[in-house]
Length: 303
Image (cartoon, rainbow, N blue to C red; front, side):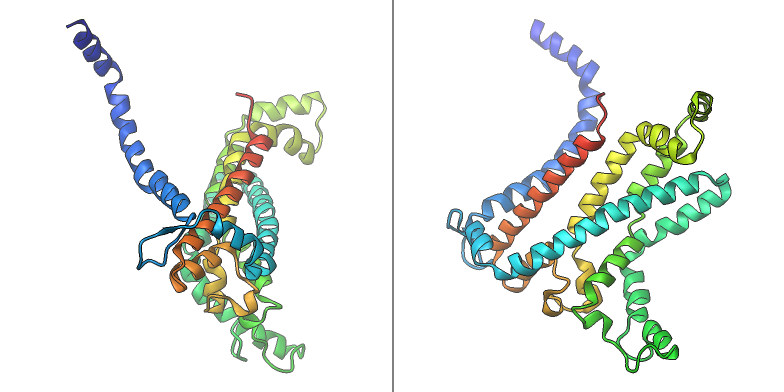
């Protein structure tokens, strides 16, 4: 009787909180925990989507590191190059543009924020329509037409089919569409800083805007910068459709724009080697976790 009374008291006090949390917990288990666990288990098997999975131990991981020349020669180097340029580059660009917008009055700031954020919402459609038209390989493509009118080109260049230019174009397009949720979080963090801090800093001797940024702005918005860094990392490593969409093929021409996500799709949905694709996805997950922990150590506050 005493236990039942105590349970009712606990349920009356904490029940609503656990009821709200249960919905999130259920969705997390169904859409995050179960798929990750399934991919981890499948990575130790040979599974062709027809026959039942056959346990092969670490065979997929050994093949990935010792026999997959495409992964070691093209995919890994492309992914690192893409992540090193687009991740920090997009992150710095998002912070710089957020800081510039924060200096504007409210109405123009809102308009420009919407303009900068819109590519992240319509990236797929805009990329297919705008960027493929811009880099079209015939003489009607905007870039070819412009360069030929200046006399810089004698004949059109197949920009999206050339291994020499494909990665550069992928980086430019991704930076163009990188003003997403992280950018909005940084803008909100900058606007949330009290003007009194800047006034107090000016009295203490800070005289330039660069000093304000390094001594006031950045230390005051470390949570928003951490969120932006994690979002930038996840967005960079999950990028894969851009190369396929621009070039129109998977694998991309001579693997010039082949990223880890493309490698997973190649083995998972084209070759139906699900176990091997799961092993590659686990490696990608570990890379994201490593860099996320690194960002947390850089930007997390003691509290």
